[in-house]
Amino acid sequence: MINSQTRLLARFASTVRADQIKDSALMAAQMSLADALAVMLAASRLGEGCAACVDIARISGTGPCVVIGHEYRTSAPMAAFANGAMAHAMDFEDTHDHAIAHPHAAAIPAALAICDMRGNVGGDELLAAIAIGADLVCRIAASFEVNPDDFGWHTTPWLGVFGAATAAGRLLNLDTDQMLDAWSLAMSQMASFGELKNSPTSHMRAIRDAFAAKAGVMGALMAQRGLKGYSEPLQGGAGFFAAVSRNHYAPQHLVEDLGERFMGAEVSFKPWPSCRGTHAYIDAGLRLQSRIKIDPAQITRIDVIINSKNRMLCEPRDIKIRPDNAINAKFSIPFTTAIALLHGHVSIASFNHDSLTDASLLELSRKVEYQVDEKISLRDVTRGSLFVHMGGQIHSEHIVHALGHPDVPLTPESFRTKFDDCVKQIGAQWALTHSEQLWNKLWALRSSSDVRDLTQLLHISKEI
Image 1 (tube, rainbow, N blue to C red):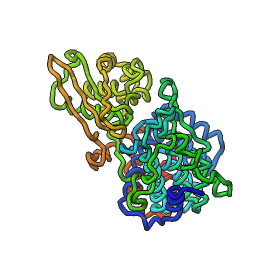
Image 2: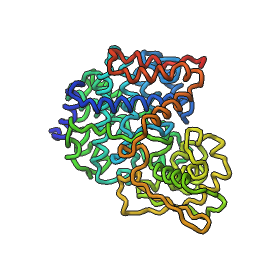
Image 3: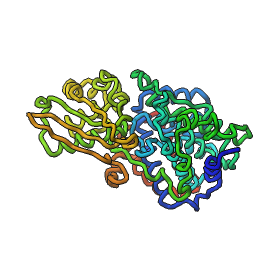
């Protein structure tokens, strides 16, 4: 028999109407969609590993679905694959800090692919699918009572497969049993191993959500066609929780305030294009840089206090102090802290080739040492302290919630600046002509009767 929490989740995901979802949740989904599309447009030009995924989508055949930032269309699964690769490659998409999840990275590419395939999907219908899919991802992630990474997993993209399958399933009008099948069939195509943290040349960390987005779409399409999955995909004796957390999870968290609280509305929007775990130290570095004169030559040591989850952002040390590609640099507390202290700003350009080979920056990165504070909980990923030893003095900053958190949100102006900075990576001329049009279309989405009016703007000719 299916556990009550799992079936409640599936019933809610498949039956709740868009007009029953809180307006605040739909508006939050709209913000996450705007943020995600801008980030994916930037990744269509700059995302490491994305070109291969895009090319595989191209050679797989034509179809009705837009590949963002490119001139051709393909099938729904392959569009989700290509766009999913772009969703995280810049490490600039939103996060749920407490759940430790990227709830939209796979859900949005999956939802857009189904919208293009199906046609005549209204804006509120799309936003409802995104809100419900993201909520499920966060609920699963927040229920863990252990860190699944300790068992060899890298769970972030694997969590995303449930958001992708849910968003796609909603838009395909799956019923409760079919939604359970979609989760089962999607998770059967997906696993994400922690070995990527030990493989500095791997592109897996950049393109990881390609697999989740594609699997989610495939799972939903198979369920729609009558394929049966597992009787208990989440809470079964050999289901998701048994495999990933060895059943160390809190079942009540899965359904607490279901339909009242949409956790996807609680995300942090990143002000800087790097792993969210680096943001406390970037924030601290920028605060220090703004109030004292930083003289790199006078700095003898930089100490950072981290929680155990963020150890992976400091090890292995030789890779973290001297990263050889952008994604490794974005996954490094020493390197990102050095950028903040040296330059006083962190941007997309901070991770280009010139930055990666900047001798002054690398020398400052080398001076960063870390210490794990076991008193900082696993879920306090944006809590941290920075101590700069300079000129015989110690200058410090302590961060509880890094900028972008709902308690310390980006201003509307900063959100728009991020959007414009990402979009212009496509090309200055295209951005000049289309950025405002895309922005306006996004904020008029709830009155749209066909989301393809939006996705058409993401279909960009090869001449750009």
